[in-house]
Structure formats: C-alpha cells, structure tokens
Length: 195
Length: 195
DNA sequence: CCCTTTGCTTGACAGTGTCAAGCTGAGTAG
DNA sequence: CTACTCAGCTTGACACTGTCAAGCAAAGGG
Image 1 (cartoon, rainbow over the protein chains, first blue to last red):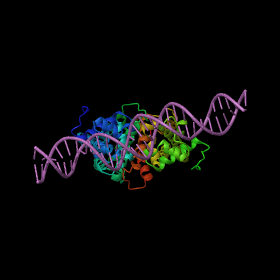
Image 2 (cartoon, chains in turn orange, cyan, red, yellow):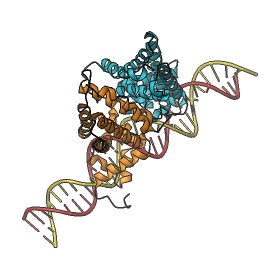
Image 3 (tube, each protein chain N blue to C red):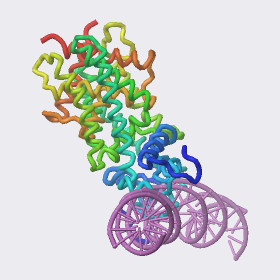
Image 4 (cartoon, protein in one colour):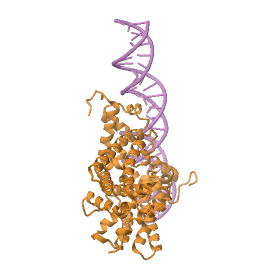
C-alpha cells in the first residue's frame, strides 16, 4: 500500500483503509491494531494517536459502512415507484443486498463490542440508517393501529434476520438470495397496505 | 468454584461451566482460555487437553446452548394447541424468549468464529434446532406454492432478526418484547394458513 | 517393585492492546 | 540564521493472550 520507508500522507485515512481491507479478507480476530498499522505503513502505536482503542478504530470503519448502507437504501428507495410499500420493500432489498455483499462488515456492525464505543460516530451513522427505514415505514399505511415502532420492528427484523441467516449459511435457499428476500418482504405487503 | 489447591473432579465439565459463566458475565473478548482455566481451578494449559482451540471450547458451550434452545422450542410447541400456525408461533416465541434471556450466548451462537469449528458438535446441535423449526413449518399449510425452505426462511428470519435487534437495543419497542414478538409473528399467520 | 500410560502442570514463544517516554522535523520567534 | 516549541509519530515496555513442547505425578498392570 505504501512504499517501504515512507509514511502515508494521511495516516488516519490509511489506517481506516487498512482496517477495512483486513475486515473483508481475514477472520475477525486477526484484525488487530498492529496488523492495520503494518498494512498502513506506520508504527504499531500510531493508531493510538487517532483512536483510543481497537474497538474505536473498527467502530469508525463501521460508521462509514453504515453511511454507505444508508446511501444505498436512499438510492434504491428513490428509484422505486410511487407505491409506499414498493418503496419500503426497495429500501429493504437494498439493505439485504449490502449485507450479503459485505458479510464480515455487516456482522461486525451489530456486535456490542463495537456498538458500545462511546464516541458516538457509529451511533449517529446507525441512527441515520434507522431513520431512513423509519421514514419508509411512516409513509406506508399501517392498518390495525400499528405504531411506527412496531412497523419498524417488523420491517427491520425481516431484513436483519435474513442477512444474518443467509450470510452465515444457516438456511439453504432453493433460489437466488435476493429473490428469496423479495418473497419474504413481499409477504409483509398486506400488513403495510390498505387502511 | 473449587477450593484452592484442589482440582475439580470433572475438569472438562468445570471448564464448560466456567466458560458459560464468563460468557454471561463479561465482554466476549475477556472470555479467554486462561480465564476459564483460572475459574475452573486448573492450569492455564489444561483446556488444551480437552479442546483443540479456544473456539472449540466456546463452540462446545454453544452446542449445549443450542440443545437447550431446541428443548425449549419443543416444550412450547407441545404446550400449544392443535392449530399448526399456533404451534409454529409458540415455537418461535420460545426461540425469542431464549434469545432475549441469554443475549450474549445467543449472539455468539451465530458468529462464524464458533460456527466454523470442525468437530461438528455445534453443527449437529444447530441442525436439530433447525429441524424443530422445519417440522413446525412443514406442518402448516403453505399457500401459493411456498416451499418448506422458503417457509423456514420466513419464520427463522423473523425470530432471528427480532432477537438480534432487540437484544442489541437497536429498536425501541413501545411494548413488552414478547408482546412485540407475538405481533410480528402473528403477522405471518396469513402466509401459513388456508390453502 | 518397576514400568507404562494418562492427565495435568510448567515453561516458553510469538502475538496482542495499551501506556510512557523519546525522537524528529516543521513552524515560529528572536 | 539560530533557538525554541510542539504536534506527530516511533520506540520500548508491560501484562495478557493462544498454543506448543516437555516434564511431573499418580494410578494401574506386570
């Protein structure tokens, strides 16, 4: 990544890049501060100048991932038609697509170790992500007096559960993952339609 | 746990107990082989005589947890009435109840690090657990040509996603968790009813 | 009584996160 | 041009980790 003997111009950015690369290529317990430092071409203690702990470095990477996920959801929603449930489903399918495309990253995004980092960067990014889903739920009819919170629980539960189980290979699908996801989500149409 | 200077009668069992206790009381990265050994009253290398790696020890604990989960699901299903969907929902609610009662354990049960241990004990226990769900799905009507695999994806996705999001505090519910879970699952009744 | 084997311990090694102290080079004041 | 300051990174150290090799000790068989 960086020529031997040289230091990268943007050390913080290089560390984030290195961490992301490691997360996507090696098992989680091999994503160490020192490995990131080596890959970024800096000393083993350089990360400490930018991140107070290992969890904080990884948390910063995950915050960025959350923002990308949010953006993907917004893009998909805006490309969908007028029907509120179609828009909600498009949002959910984008979520599933991101999760399946980045399984290691996705799994880490929901681990207490990283969620509990106190700098708030990740919490904020995760909040934005939830807001996009919340808006999509709020725009749909919710018959039977369903609250927005209950609607979010239903919608998020479906996509989060699907990504978790499929990316870990726990359910064997007899069709393409995204087709199966479409079927699972389509099943919620009646709960978010009519009045 | 064990008097100083004494070794436990059942070292393997003591290690499993210690690991379970640690999993439920300290952050995941503090659940070390050496901490388990200390708590069990044996030397730091004793675990190596029973488990080839740290992941294998934890995997054994998780296999046991899977068996308990399976048993809870069977008990709940058998206590439910005759209606196939009521039985499926009872199975799912037992799943959610277990997950929310043991959040740390549940989270570890679905991490690649431990799932990929090759001794097969955990895979077998997980398989049994999936079978119970599969049987419950198979017993329901599945209109629209829904396969058992697709039905399992829908049912498992809902409970797995719910436990993950609620136990990590990512969705704020405006009712008791188990009530919310009931609402989410009830929503699938139409997909598993009629003909 | 000796000898083997099983079951655990002791000791060591490379690797980790994190802290303290030191170096280095750029920028600024004199 | 020199001297000082100081941020930014490095070096070094510590306690801790998983894992391996070797050793001890007690139980069982001859």
